[in-house]
Length: 460
Image (cartoon, rainbow, N blue to C red; front, top):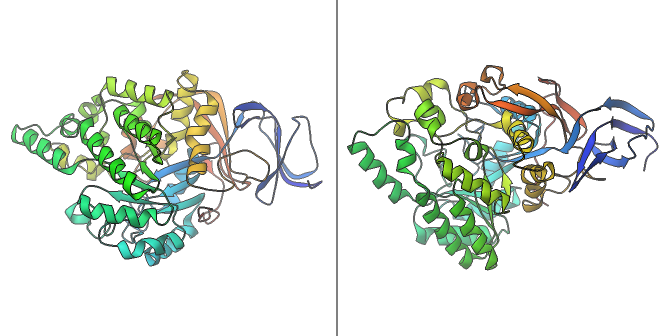
């Protein structure tokens, strides 16, 4: 252990696994050099007093769509990673969709080159796996993607280029896609919704003149997700590779995965804060500004999802941050089916989950597991997701007692109007500071770190 450190963080209660106790965090070279007695004050170039705060491992957001390079007015990687830092996130996983999609080794390289100069925090990148790019899957793994993503629905007709190599709707072809991903050893993640089923239901609603609010949820009931999850799990039993269900909205989907895991299938479940904190009532209230796929569920469905989380059937949480401009959403106010799906959520990830801790829905160690530790383990990110000697000094300092009301006008994301669902929500717990590899990139409402500090991270 060195006798002089780059940084000391003193006075905080530190979350290390299941325990939370006062400690002094000593940082050198961007890593945690030691966890010392709380009274220890060895020499250091900088000392930060975090008295009254809790120090958590930096959050890992497993599901982000900045789509950079893309439509900068919605988001670019600078604004997206700044918003993430404000939400206590120190590493994000960017999805493969973009005007330069990550669907080949060259595409991965071009995206990393475009994102790195703008990154305030560290980032990983999903590769795209579809029926159009089977021959590119192994090369993407070699290029360093953290996992693969496949959409089981056709892309919007106007966005075919963005989705090239990212989708597959034919189950026979999907067998080949899953076999190719399984050969890489990386997790294969899926947007699970059964296309023929929701297309039929949507057509019936449209014929009946039902085109607003909850009609979206009625066109995609939970069974639409569950049928698709069951298909993926059946194919995973054959392919043998690890798979993941992302943005799970159904407790029955989570149970299907748990049953598959009991049979030896390596399958995981991700859910997102909107499915835990909002119901389909928001669709009637906010229309397109509450539209996401899968849709928000009933109150009973939300309670069932919390029970699944309590039972350990959900492994980690990501935001599914999806920026769209206000006019892109509002132009479809009279036809919910024409509105682009997706909500923003980077800046509220930690505050929402801390509110759940305050409300007694979660313990703080369980929140850390869901929002950081488990993702680092499942996606093999060495040095991430824990406050421990030798780990990256990715830290989130939070004030558990702070009470405040969310106002989207203060948001950092360029698509702040797409955060209308959070407006007026009372929160308890806020992010005070965010550190990425020992550098404070966010403090007291402001970005303090330079763009370009963030690094591309690969699975070990």
